[in-house]
Image (cartoon, rainbow, N blue to C red; front, side, top):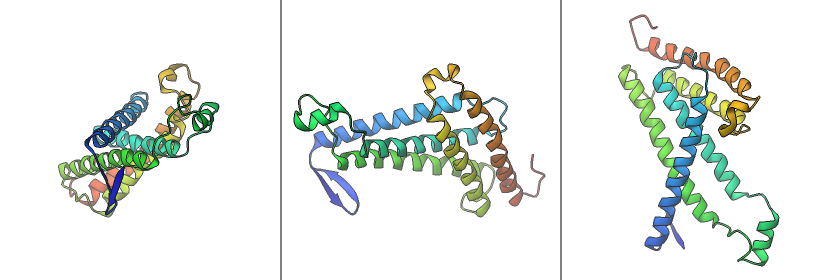
Length: 198
């Protein structure tokens, strides 16, 4: 169904290409909406810059996408999936792993591109080289915050966040991690500025 060419998967027909694009758009929308729902419930007192919050949401979406990919490639075995192997009309149709990788590769590329662009814009606005040790340290601090928040937020149904007792843990974790991002931002700006950094 898909032809491999230099690590790119090229669909043999237009219908498969459209299906891949639709599924990639669906996954992209799903992970970004989930990430935004997490960002929306973070404490308001965090001293993160607006651009840092946006980059944090992109890293959250990236982590969510990775988890969805792992889950889709190793789905839990249920009675319905077992029946589907014997009686295809009864069970759920299993997705071709090659197609699943293609969906997720598209979304991963989009998210990486958006992260690079957002970090680049922030650095250029501050007259800072985006490829420098302080810039990379700052970016890694945001990524670490996103991974830590994701591991906890993933255990919470974000639609019922208000009634979840774990919402306090998420708020505390965000307040504990935000100062590291702020410190890295200050170090980044101080490294390339002669003016005092706020």
